[in-house]
Image 1 (tube, rainbow, N blue to C red):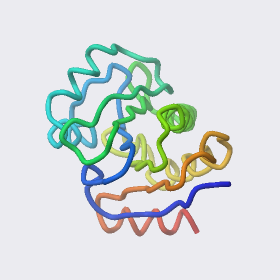
Image 2: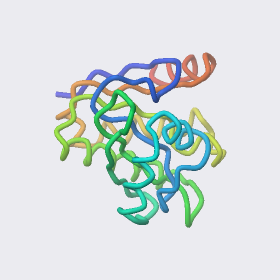
Image 3: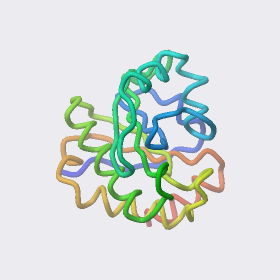
Image 4: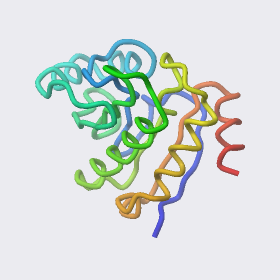
Length: 164
């Protein structure tokens, strides 16, 4: 059974649930954009865990605690880094995030639109790739709820359109 998929407008770091996905680079350095917001909201423990974990490949994901945030975990989806963001890296890091969420026993997960911030990938296209990846991922069936966050009202409206 597929989870419910919904859209919220606002700051993903305020999500109260199991897992928040970070739009990460493969070196797991929390710089700006969603990663910077997670670093500020969660505190230094998240970066410390990332540093202990070390780099991953583009298209992979890693999990850490969520520090001071209300989520239980942060799943760092590396859609960019040593190589530029691409359809493949968005798809692969979305699936890797769902696999990690399932392995952690998560029932709810909040996603930003990977690659659409500082990496500059088209927002609507990235959202469509992510939705397609979720639909084809067996691990998504173990989740109860997937929430896509649009920080700005126009991003949330775009997500509603993409979801049809």
